[in-house]
Image (cartoon, rainbow, N blue to C red):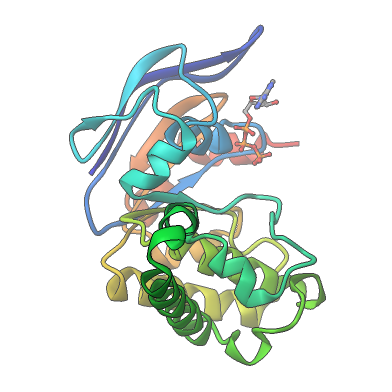
Length: 251
Ligand code: ATP
């Protein structure tokens, strides 16, 4: 489904990614781990079109997306969350989700001039879809609260709901468990597995909480200093001497 081929990304003298190859099969939950500064978020940024690679190619469903813009990548079916929560804090929970139907909103604002009834119908459908997603994540009762008033763990969940609103095929989750307590983390693991099945998703997951990665990922890529140093099942990666060394050397 997603192929990252020989991708290198430089920032001035810093090599953030060095000849990286990642291959993600449809329907999988794949982990992307590595010490701080290893290049994990840069992988998400080149996939989602925030940065262009210096060399290499990225294919999504056999389609070259290497130099696509963020909105084009999103329209093709790739959605993401961010390491630092990026909600519209002064908007309600449900409006944060509905704002993600951006394609429909802009298209329909134009459309609305001519066909108001169609616009209203789609607005209603979007509203229902947003409500359904919020129910799955246990946020329905709080749909009219301001996003900024949600506890941190729920803000993280709302980020995922918002990413799902665009009906992606590939979901990129950047440290979804960060700042969550153990109970919330356990709930999150179940939710990720549940949404994968329900929405027929493929998921690429960056996570520092090893229990999340080890429990829900079929395959894990390990990055260190911008290079893939290991690929394998959770057990294989856990016992890989290069991985152990990379983590022990951290800090
Ligand atoms: P963390 O786990 O700390 O979030 P990471 O594995 O996600 O780290 P990246 O954020 O991808 O790592 O960063 C990889 C390297 O590239 C780091 O050395 C970082 O400082 C550098 N880097 C990332 N983005 C930029 C940028 N926009 N300009 C300059 N350097 C950057």
